Length: 296
Ligand SMILES: Nc1ncnc2c1ncn2[C@@H]1O[C@H](COP(=O)(O)OP(=O)(O)OP(=O)(O)O)[C@@H](O)[C@H]1O
Ligand SMILES: [Mg+2]
Image 1: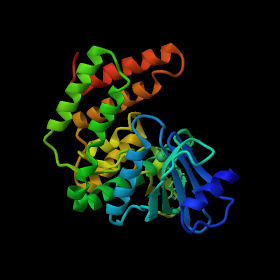
Image 2 (image 1 turned 90 degrees about the horizontal axis):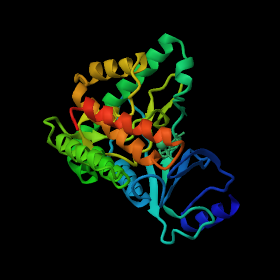
Image 3 (image 1 turned 180 degrees about the vertical axis):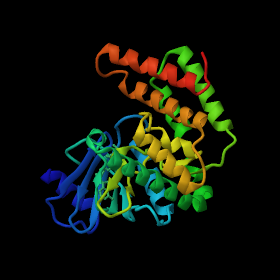
Image 4 (image 1 turned 180 degrees about the horizontal axis):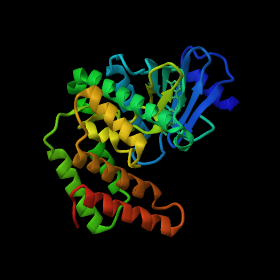
């Protein structure tokens, strides 16, 4: 860790002395607490689907565009840059870095949700739904400028298709792209990766949203694509989203998002785990496509 610290400090201006606590590590890199109210996010060149360079571009562009909003906490972008030499460090090759305001709270623990009392779970769902509605509202003003980031759903399908060879599934995924592109619904600024690990909660505060690497423009329901688990939590999220935004969740468009997510899961997981796991992902995608109106 020490040599990466030294190598990075030479390339990024004004970094505080380490050691820095590791706040998170995902497929695409690491997030470090710099101890001065900011965090450093290092983005690798390679991770899952797509490229680290495109993720870095989207996240810096999105953060520069998003206005601060009432009802949801969003990190301020302090500085960002690309690494001229991706191989200048001891770890995996790096595409770029972002320095962000550190927000209070912990990511929502998806496993822990089921240990919550019913009313706590409902309240959490309501807070998340309301925060997303506030975020979408704040994004209305920048949807036009954000259009250059593209559609998270269409991009995800294309990325997933790089690893899906089955001709029948490919035809259906092309069809899903056409249907999503043709939907008659307002296009708004989207977070693009609304899963629980990207929501930070702290007592007495509104939820915070982090991780804008998949941001873009599309219809609102795309931001619910990780909410495939039915149950009281999802009901609470949808209910408060509708109440705060004044717009209900369209079920068919929601199912299109679930199908996009199923395609991504299949593409990411196809080489991993037991073959039975792969078969389960194929049948999940098959069913998700059918439920989105894309028959085979
Ligand atoms: N601005 C921030 N303030 C406080 N904590 C943060 C902030 N940004 C990120 N974190 C912490 O770091 C974790 C990972 O951050 P982030 O989601 O941006 O990257 P990632 O998960 O590695 O990316 P990916 O989701 O593509 O794998 C978050 O779950 C959160 O705990
Ligand atoms: Mg994340």
